[in-house]
Length: 124
Image 1 (cartoon, rainbow, N blue to C red):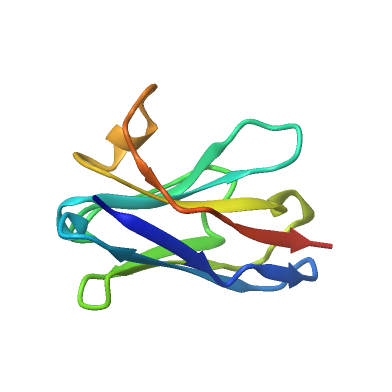
Image 2: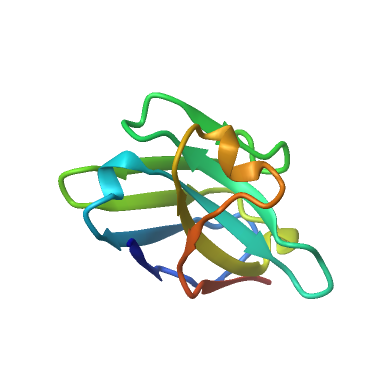
């Protein structure tokens, strides 16, 4: 069982930066890939970024490449999403997720994930 809690959301102007953090607890944390998803009003939930168990592999959605950076700290059981050059279209509820297997396994249909409750990011 993995429990995830997000923090760091808020309101920022276009072009600004924000850092989201996700704290994870549970004995399976070190064996899980972790990532961030987001959902804006009227849109499907989409994958934003993900990182492998030991942090050796990462994935970024095309819409955030070059602007967002995902990282994890196994000692602190945290995963962060550093968001730069924020745009109004980045406005969404951001959710932390964890799953077994590879980074890309988390984006396959019907994949099993642990979810946080989300943190709101507003760019305006």
